[in-house]
Length: 474
Image 1 (tube, one colour):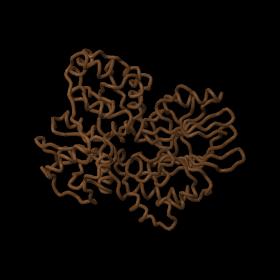
Image 2 (cartoon, one colour; image 1 turned 90 degrees about the vertical axis):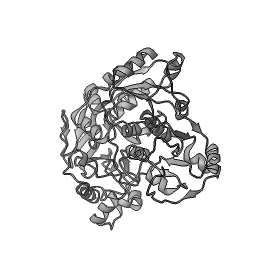
Image 3 (cartoon, helix red, strand yellow; image 1 turned 180 degrees about the horizontal axis):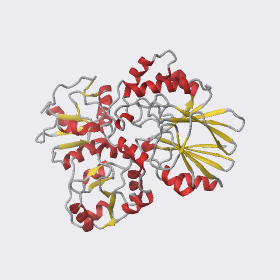
Image 4 (tube, helix red, strand yellow; image 1 turned 60 degrees about the vertical axis):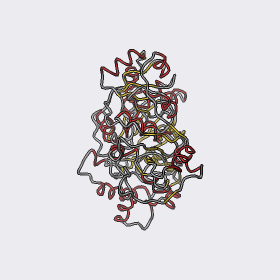
């Protein structure tokens, strides 16, 4: 028997490869399926099952392409009703995989079809639980996502189901069972997930707040719902793609890999409603970029921020990337349902510049330079675009919280005629923020290199505890 976790950092997502006696089950696959088929080929094994723990919101699963190319059976738990052929597994049903068994455990709560898969080894011992978004390391799945698809499923109803699922289905299992969740820290599918990607159930019973043995259902509901922020707007759109089906990733990649000369790129930008997405590093972008393009760097939390900043997954996209990164970017966009990349700038930004095309820039200064400015002007306006929780933990005195993840609300607070110095934690999010607002006519936003970390390191900025600003200083 082989169990392998295939973890994708930018989505904080874990897929799983289970192999026994020449048969394979894949749990919660990403959309690009080569990682799974290549493993099976190397093991001289056949992919028998694609086991889905639920209809995912934060990424588009690879179940359809994987089933089509391998003949594997797509399996969902009770109450799932997708628009394609699948196996409707029953609660408690045993699936045979080579010499091992997989028990289906229906655990509604995160969503109503949420299902965990219990692995039973060759000796009949229960050894691992693939818990999907029902149980994370340090947390449980948020119960407010399914209501975005079915309004009658309120977060309180789902949280009550989740309480029952955990107490009646999961907590009675043996303490030495290994928990393999679908996500870790960084995912928007939970609040307090650990950076660890696996643990024993016994340790989770001892440390996970949601598994406290004496917690009442009402206390559980209150605790699980406390502090939830609105999920990214693309989540319900991904859910529907996973339910209804989608275009093969092969076609998506083919459409996106159209190399466009600077002239052709300019024509495409002018004659379509395509968004120009520049995925270079923040500081490379600041030095020069195509006017009205936005920057979301490929080397950060790319897919989640694309999903949060681009509300329409059917938006046509033109890419500017570092050389050789084109396919990676198109693939990572497709992971979260952005299938309509229509081409990329051949030769990257340097080709655009060398062709004499119009360019724009964003001013970026060091934390020490900002400290000097602030020392002579106590009315200096500093925008902190980190999440509210980060701001609450510690922030620069007089700094104003304008979270990137609520950019439209943040934008409404800003005076286009005023100059603002914008920072996040390290410089990634601030450039996203500035690039989007610059494309909307905000021309007086200055980036702080290195963000809050660099500002704190100087020792030149007074820090303060959380205080909700009643007004923005305009």
